[in-house]
Image (cartoon, rainbow, N blue to C red):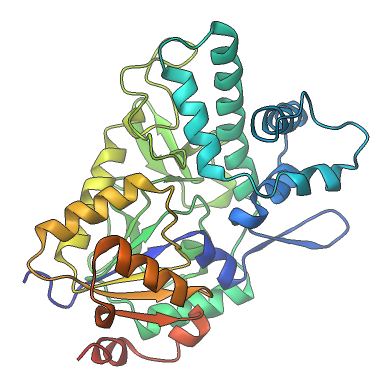
Length: 347
């Protein structure tokens, strides 16, 4: 089949976390990049806007923990720990549905639109605080050396730029669908959920490679399976479709289309730090349509501390034979073998 030796590497939130991404916080300590289990505590701790933080916290307590308001007598740390079980995608799905569904009262819609905007704004402020460090450079450069070839594709669902910034200065890479031009033999990177270094200017998305140029309001596609629900709906100024949806720019659907094409043609899919959550219905639909279009199922590699459970989930959910799925507990272990050795495991 086409692209017999091409591989697609999918980076989930656990990839940056497992690679050691962290931010310096007050007092000289470090905060690890947020994943589902730590998202709200870390996100609210690092958010810059005081009003946004207060509004988001009150909203979560009211709509997801059934409080009238955030408990004022609890400490900040205690309150945010109470928010830990709340699923991030469920929050965005609720907001996007309430922002657009018929029959929603103007008061509720005004409230959810406010929170939606606050979350989108603060995501950019929070994730720009996470820079490449010695750990991430060591792990990702070894990944590139052991496994990546320029014919491969990196699909990153992360807003952060840890992977990109961890590569050596001599490495050539570009954002497919966003960067109009690129050097020959450069690594292709697709970011379907946007990136903190992307900005929309006069209807076109451009990327900023220098940290000093990162925009205050980056391109962030909300982590919700209702990604197209905003089609035709104006934002609060009435000028264009609401931010945070795939229809924000024609370039974003092009990125998703390119991802589907690359996954359809690749020999293997390697998922790093992606757990196939049941709530991620949109990406699951992409996988199903891709599998249906292939002559044979791809080889699948899962790199995750919970890889055995994820293997069973993938096998059962997508009806893929177990012998076509291999597992590794972390990137350090995966990096101990070569690309050739990985593919040989399936023979």
